[in-house]
Length: 187
Image (cartoon, rainbow, N blue to C red; front, side, top):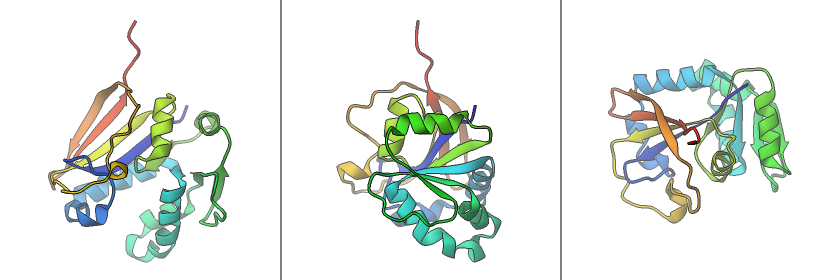
């Protein structure tokens, strides 16, 4: 069975958005290698509407500067969960509506490599709460972003899911990638 992996960047104070203000100064050769390995061990991208719209607006124009990484981002099958998306024309895109948990569980049952999610928003929150998300990779950056709104923080009210640390990776920039999996149920 395929795994669904959510990979996202976070500052030490828990901020997971406005990465343009704090993330890129830490993106080095180690980061590029890990990101490349992560993408190339996946054969599909899963995302919510906001992530999809951001990626669909930028990635088609980035192949020249990102090479085969950009080609892979643009040519993998994309699955976007949305009840409001009116147009999905970035490469091979399928819009998932209805019972999201059941539809994503069906994707996991198909043969193939991992399914990669970038970011941690409402979709990842829902999948984790329902036992469909297999791994969370937190790219913890050695910086305090210094600002936030409730929507910009990793914390989501009402989502208590025990996790266990599966792996850590320390990058040369000081970023630590923490790989968590849902903890096995006790008893």
